[in-house]
Amino acid sequence: MDDRGDLARRVAAQVGVLPPAALLDIWTDVTPLDVSVDVDLYDPGQISERNTTYEIPIYRPDLLLIGTDGGGRGFFVQRGDPDAEVVRIGLGAVGSDDGTRLGRLAALVTNGWPGDDDDPQEDGEGDGPLGVEQ
Image (cartoon, rainbow, N blue to C red; front, side):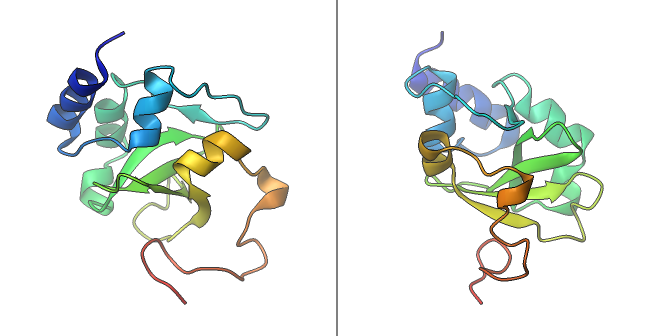
């Protein structure tokens, strides 16, 4: 596997921003990813292609798509945030939906990802869109 710094620079050259530290930890096997729900975090070589395919730079240039749930929803983080919070947004609604805030990437990797029944905002309560407190 690439050196962590080289990997970070390679991804940054492709997407224009350094990846979150927790994502680098997963990619370099510092932190193994063990999930009991459908979580597919993209490999370093997939990030740029998937963001381009789903036109993320056009519709949400503030976000970086890092994976999917296998059911048509993407996992996004704020571009350039080293302690990134993950937001789940339907891939067909990226420009019109603020999504569901799931928590900090590092905590999700350590403590587990919520399933569909565990959505923190499912009842309409909780924080607002990424970066906006209610």
